[in-house]
Amino acid sequence: MFHRTARVTEHVQLAERTFRVRFECPELAAVIRPGQFVMLRLPNTTDPLLGRPFALYDTVLDGSGKPLAIDVVYLVVGKMTGRLAEVRAGESLEVWGLLGKSFLDVGYPERVTFVAGGIGQTPFLAYARELLGTRGFGGDPPRVRTKKVVLYYGVRTASLAAGVEDFRAAGVEVHLASDDGSLGTKGFVTQLLESHGPTGPLVGCGPEPMLHALAKLAAKWKVPCQVSLETPMACGVGICFSCVTKVQTPDGWDYKRVCIDGPVFDAAQLVWDHKT
Ligand SMILES: Cc1cc2nc3c(=O)[nH]c(=O)nc-3n(C[C@H](O)[C@H](O)[C@H](O)COP(=O)(O)OP(=O)(O)OC[C@H]3O[C@@H](n4cnc5c(N)ncnc54)[C@H](O)[C@@H]3O)c2cc1C
Ligand code: FES
Image (cartoon, rainbow, N blue to C red):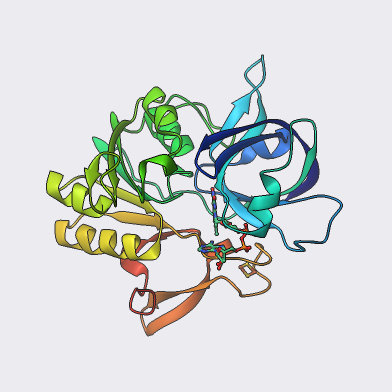
């Protein structure tokens, strides 16, 4: 676990209310894996008091190929993200991690399909690079695990789509959907996915109704499906129990803490009835 003040080296707007912030944190960049997250907090203030969780978007290498910085992409929704958007390059953030578990092992399938809704695309860029073998994470050398990564990405409206070019540049095939038809196919991203027919392993991140629809599709198609939950969290390290989710057990169900048992779960193991 590292906790440090990290210098912001780049902060750019990608879409409406959506930004990419880059901060130097070589110790974390060297060990973090796709699916894991960090807590960010604004330094020298107690408002807001608690840090907020953000997924690894990508790591940035220095001139000699060593991990130097971390990219996070975020949507402004409230107090912390609103203030984060005002932080300039040269200023600093409080960062701590490594937090959470990385994506589950999918083996070596022909194709892996990501399904993202809202700001749920953020954990997938690093994961695409890892699966396609163009970048190693957590100290591992790059290793090809699949030939093809496809992203289905749904947003409410076109102006909220963030990072599409990053995915295309990483070699990902991208299919877009929007609620109002202003980008890609009109309708829910899970409907677009269903219209294209069964796939190999599915990986989802986004609003829980979308993840529930994805879990049902995966069950119908009999394909493995893992989902990354964005449950609000207070401590991020397993102490406060503010982040629990219901998971099936041999006796019925039990609560699991999303911060330390997740955020990635097998969709078939989650109890969805209380969520949607
Ligand atoms: C593991 C994990 C990874 C995440 N990765 C990202 C990421 O990469 N990019 C990103 O933009 N966001 C991500 N989030 C969500 C992010 O943590 C929240 O958007 C952030 O905490 C909001 O803080 P705030 O102070 O701006 O909003 P607040 O002022 O705390 O809340 C504003 C409004 O947003 C709602 N809200 C807050 N957090 C959430 C949430 N997690 N889900 C749904 N509604 C919420 C509140 O109920 C409130 O209505 C992630 C969450 C988790 C758990
Ligand atoms: S956020 Fe405190 S236990 Fe998960």
